[in-house]
Image: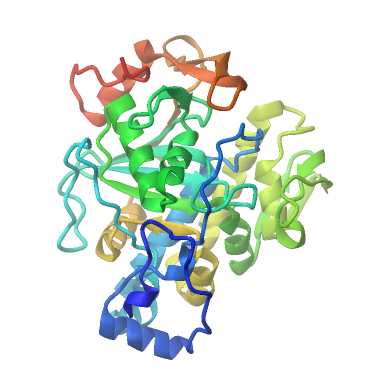
Length: 415
């Protein structure tokens, strides 16, 4: 790959206009001869932005992020079905997703890259960032709708999905001051118009505020979800009751140019075969659900179960070129191709009972990890609805999951 095709970590605004791409066979040949890299087209230009109060948005939920990550990991898993196929069809395209981000001097030492596909020798902490790159903001300056730390412990055969609500009111190191945690990536990216700086600041915020050393990151643009569903042929869902939403965001598909538009959606009860856009609406809508937000969580679980049936290795390999195209510009990570393979192989043997989920938000008793509140945010000049993290309950949980002993891990105020 020529130097002109390499990504500029500072995303300068005077980039040359896009050129006509050669046929896929020529791209593969050039890539194998010159070494892998992240395509320049993946990183769009973004002028310096002025921070404004983000409009409240329906997050797609952690299920989408996990599902998309599962697709990426399974891409690597196909190597077991043929080394030549891996070399010519998987390794080169998947390498476009791999984008290492250097660590700042303030960050602790993380797990070093593996030399092969065996990831079972130690535990891993992977930071998943799901961004709302739907047109309201200019990439790379986007908010992170989903932030989750995935703790993988192969020795104990346990996986913990620790979700940090986007409205968590925390101290952002480097920038200073209290902000919603969904602005950590945004504030980092806007300093020098840099995707890498966004990842670094989001990663450092988790490490400083929650005491968790991040070994790998994965950034996912959530608008790739519908495309993946369509490529896999849709999903079959049995709706227990109709879903009606008169103010559903009309910001995908043909109307993506109007990010603040609304439309009415209606999904009838009973067995339904949902397209990608319908599945997106099913897990995204919060209005008119008969059982409120609990129902939304159940809908997310339904779609995840339906998607898991589609994500067997044979089906992923069959649709591999299309899946890679769906995720181009939607997924970046410093998980290497070999590590992807290792995680995919490990995941095949993991039972559902070994996967634990926890959200660091309001809850009952000692599971109350935060309090709903309203604070004035001078950065955006308005009151903000936030979650105040409760370190009294968060710290014992974090220390137990991540094996931190009795250290002071939770320090969300930066004091």
